[in-house]
Length: 96
Image (cartoon, rainbow, N blue to C red; front, side):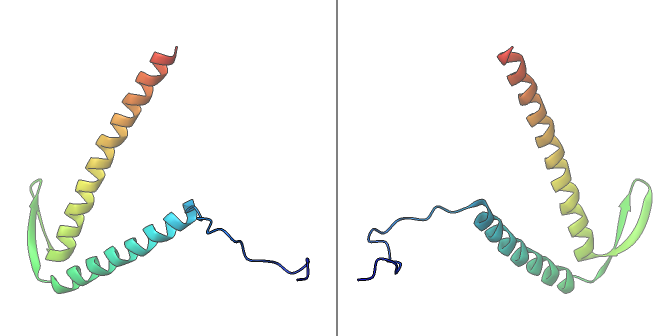
C-alpha cells in the first residue's frame, strides 16, 4: 500500500450537526409552511367585511386570517421579549 494514498477511517466517527445544517432544516420547514399558507389563502378568497375600531373594510378571508395570525405572533413575541429582558436584569443584579 502506498503511504501517500488517503485511507478511509476505520472507525465509524459520528459527525456532529452544525448550525448551518440546522438552518437548512429550518429553511425547508419554512418553505413548506409558506406553501401551505399560500394554498390556504388561494382557497379562501371570498371577501369578508372586517369591522375594527369603528372602521369597516373588505378583505379576502384568507388574507384577514393571515393578518390575525401575524398580529397574534407579534403579540407573543413582544411578551416574550419583555420576559427575556426582565430575566436578564434579574441575572445582572444577582451577579453584582
